[in-house]
Image 1 (cartoon, rainbow, N blue to C red):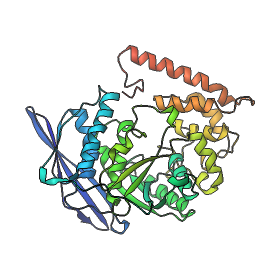
Image 2: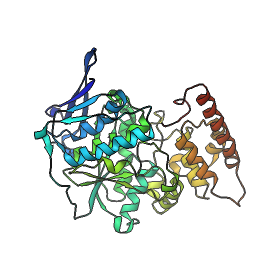
Image 3: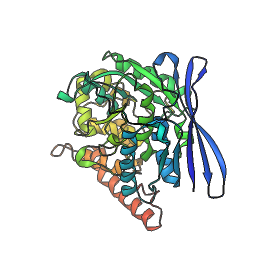
Image 4: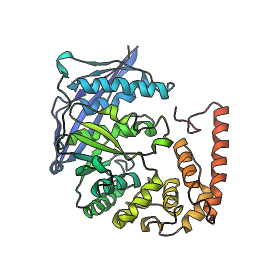
Length: 396
């Protein structure tokens, strides 16, 4: 039997930082045993904390890795029974939607380490949320500050920027200005930003389009002492979901434990609708950071697919392109002919943008979208034909 054993370690003090770690042991079926260390760290004054025997963030972070490798997951720490039940359904979701990539695995927790406590209730309606500076996260921040979610609106105690996701731990020059910009953006709403770093992407080699949701929730567990709910910003709209995807209103709530409820937030809105909502928050709109590149530390390259797509989210509605994305459609008109759509999610987004502004004169970049989508369909058909669905952007 192949196993992946999680061994949580006591926290370490590294100068001004606190680091929580878990050793990952692989063994079984005649293979040479191996060990890696997954860690999360934060400045000591950021309020991150975790009980020494709490294994929940490590279990959430590594479940998809065990499913990908077909390993029984042996957990050396405490886990709530509610989380274990939810993760059985989470596995069912991934096995049903991406069966070639993930199989169901057994999770073994010592009987004395299973916590039967009921789920916590948060009567104050408080929450925490991750914040990257992107369109989805900025919309979440503004929506709850302005109470646009009605009775679902919550007071967000603070936001957390996660370093090691789109900003990799090796890109320190990119992290500092991005954090500074995000802190300035949230200050306009009276919001507070905290920071957590992790080497998740270095030791959990699961497709990032699949793993980013569980990685985010694992990180937010280090702040669950401050609020019993974490809000996860939606990616796609309810009527245009891309399945499977790392974040969705189907799978995100299945990462809830007794101590931290996970709510998928904002799926009634498309990215273009979120862009329109941000017109009422100029500080948020004009400080957007959507780019994954590192050539413009803390900012946007204004050439990649995501930069150009976000420009289009605004421009297609007759709205001004944010200053953080150049302030005009010039880069969009120039760059759209170089875009290659690599995932079904990207295709879905551009189809949604193409549907906007009908009946009005079409700019060059709008007339190019059908060509962009046609090239994407041809590219996908080619790679499927040669047996490379991974190159075709097929999620499953």
